Amino acid sequence: MTLASHSRSSPAPTAPAPSSRPATASPTSPSATGLLPLFATRWLTTEPTRQTIRSTLGGPLDGTLCDEMVLPASALVKVPDHLTLDEAATLPCAALTAWSSLVTLGNLRTGQTVLVLGTGGVSIFALQFAKALGARVIITSSDDAKLERARALGADVTINYRSEPQWSKPVRAATDGEGVDLVVEVGGAGTFEESVKSTRVGGIVSLIGVLAGAQKDLRLLPIVMNQIRVQGVLVGSREGFEEMNDAITKHQLRPVIDRTFAFEEAPEAFSLLAGQSHFGKVVVSHAR
Ligand SMILES: NC(=O)c1ccc[n+]([C@@H]2O[C@H](COP(=O)([O-])OP(=O)(O)OC[C@H]3O[C@@H](n4cnc5c(N)ncnc54)[C@H](OP(=O)(O)O)[C@@H]3O)[C@@H](O)[C@H]2O)c1
Image (cartoon, rainbow, N blue to C red; front, side):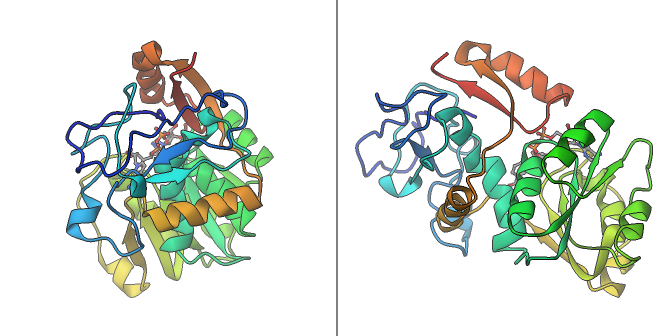
């Protein structure tokens, strides 16, 4: 969640320790010179290998909740100029995962329909990117007030998954019975079958998270009979990060931050996340 980190177990550093908080930047004013770490520090181009995809911060390498970090220069990406450092801190994981899911692996096109599950960090980025790219967005949430906020961000159709446990029905109804082109699947076991039912023949279920469980018995035939592509997504590469940042700059997108905590308040930030009352991202900031 933070910008600065150290990495005792990281690959041999090849560049001087970068400052991710230059003297001219503040966490809440635009930064022209801030730097962001790659989540997978050795994954530079689109095709991952076993080695590059396992070079991830927060395990096996140390994470970013620390004061300083040393990284190879190739593992750093420039912050989009219009963003504050607090906003930029949301990009390396949640935003890039949403981008990879929709664009790098999903090949999303204008006019297609995306189903986004819930209103957490990945999902709200997916909503913002999909709308910027000219797609139609259907979003679910357990909370009508959050659905209202999603609508204000451009969501076209909103569904409360608590009052509509079989939410694939309203999704199909909203797509002339066909289903969506792509699902941003953050629920996992507890949502997967409804996601498959929500997907058009030949569509994509982009499997990202396991908020509703990681294991269950699965009916595989609907996936085969509807030629659905189940696409696992692990964050993304440096190439994807730079493409995403270009799009963020072009569309002047701003990450949605629910709340920002001081560094020493990090445990409270994790409690807020666990309670799932947030909308979008939660940030831990060094400079508060
Ligand atoms: N594969 C990757 O590369 C990658 C990258 C980042 C994150 N992840 C994983 O992806 C998941 C989402 O990450 P995140 O950062 O967006 O999490 P988050 O911000 O903690 O998301 C929490 C929100 O998810 C929604 N949710 C929970 N259970 C749900 C359900 N059964 N159906 C629909 N929505 C549900 C809720 O939205 P409402 O409150 O609106 O109901 C909740 O507020 C996590 O499992 C995370 O570990 C994976």
